[in-house]
Image (cartoon, rainbow, N blue to C red; front, side, top):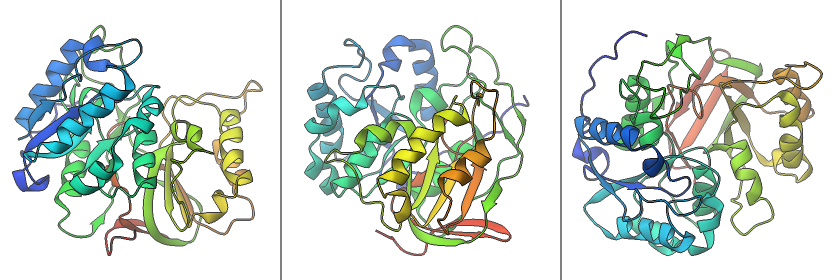
Length: 340
């Protein structure tokens, strides 16, 4: 991999202040991988942020950083600090659902600063959206993306900075390279990531869609079905991602959306570039056919291989931002109204 070029630091006005709260709502990655966490803190400082870990952000309790109530209170501590301009999750995992009843959603709404994360953290972001929160971003996390041996990918940082600055419409752009290389942290990651040339974003079904953006991990948000934390998906342009699965594993997940009636409500769908894809037991690797079968009869555009989620580099995607998709040629633009 070529050396990363230098990046211009984020300006304080990009986030309403350069103090960045670090929150650990899922796995205790900062505790388990202290060297990578130190690299992340150094990278964030080099890029102009003043990272402020929440009280339990560096701790470990059973499978999480702390008890669900303590993890939620960590977020509240960061939100009550008026000097903090944004909150970034440290990493994903599997336990974020536990904290949903403990969150003070009124505080999240009233403070209204960006809360950033993906993977398991999207369950929290979708729950916040269901309770009226606005400033939510599907984007990079501290340990995951800023703790790399060479620091964050420029594309990842620049997309996040563009979204946080909110200076006008943004036409999403494709990276030149990508990777799903993910060496074991603090053991095998003292090296550059192996990258490959990025293939173009692809259209599976042509059309035009416009509406509020909603992004998430397919398998992280599935447990929200049937709970009070499921957001309204009517008219949304859905950006959805997964990682390390075969096409057969997509079938029940997409069928759940279809049979519940929620798939009929979205105005367009964008699938992420798929990292470490597997095959079905039969050897089938037809992801495109699986997706098209799930959307049969729905006249909406479908785009795939877009760079967000569990591959890198990644786009940052602000919830509720009005997004416009045209497919001939393919152009995806953020902006032009709140869309909420």
